Length: 410
Image (cartoon, rainbow, N blue to C red; front, side, top):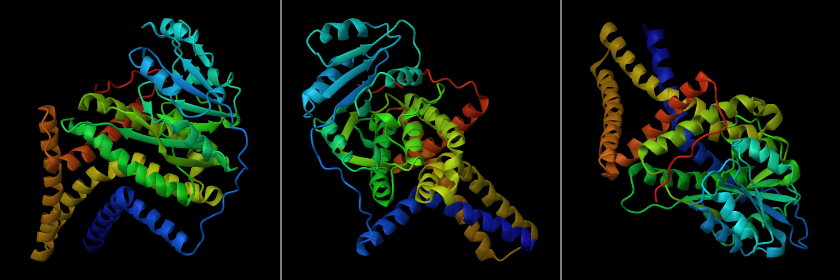
């Protein structure tokens, strides 16, 4: 009994520590490491290229049936403060049937730096990007989504980061525009990305970003590697493969893409399940980055910030509930002191209350009501449940790079 009980308790506390480290501990560890480096003046020097003539850059906008967003997106690109003669626009609208081609062709007559790639067959974003990158001739390529708005300094701020020689890619910041009356999922998405932005600042100073934001990121064009056509997280795969080749992926928080939250919990779930499915796919294809002896800091950041969150911790949560019950059964079966029993009942009560609060948040959300007390438990459980669904989806196979985007709030 004693050895089995001790092992069960050890496993419970180990998994608890793992969950804490994944969501809060890594941020704390990274913050301490960054502060220590600064205090000891150990911040690595980055070799800087002397600025000269502005580099040419191509802004690539994949836009499948995005006519509703194209006028605003095109104007947003034209409003960038980067020198117009060095800024090239490339809209990829293959397979669109909503009049996108006709609209862009009309605009092309007055915008000489606008290029359109269209066709009647929908290839999917990844295959289209692989084909498009063969045609890009500028040294830098920026990817951005059609349904996002960039701040006017976004391009120039991304480009400035490439003045450091070993920077192979730069990711901007994703910001979620929410109203006070938005759904909990939408507000949760905004909270999640604010925390992600904090972690990215730490990651960038510690060594490198581990995953770009697909809404806005830039790469040195000659570093682009064709991505498998069924890839779900192309931005993540592209940026991590660049990091794996020894280049840094930098973070520029003052270049941001503003996006509305998902229209509903159902739409947000569809998006997060897809991301989770892509996470498992990416972990499999990037397994070589788990070699700490070869990749050092990159492996540490990759495992701490991504692998644990996507592939480990979501499975720990139901196990913690189960282990708590098993420990109580062991105590009642073999007998123990009342104080210990009370302790484990209290832990079980805390876990149960947390999940009941999450369920309450879900019920209120379905009624378009938001209660702040239930907000964090709801979104935390929601995210991890989507990961479990994503794992089931990944195990089913038959993954396609052609997908329907989640509907965004207006």
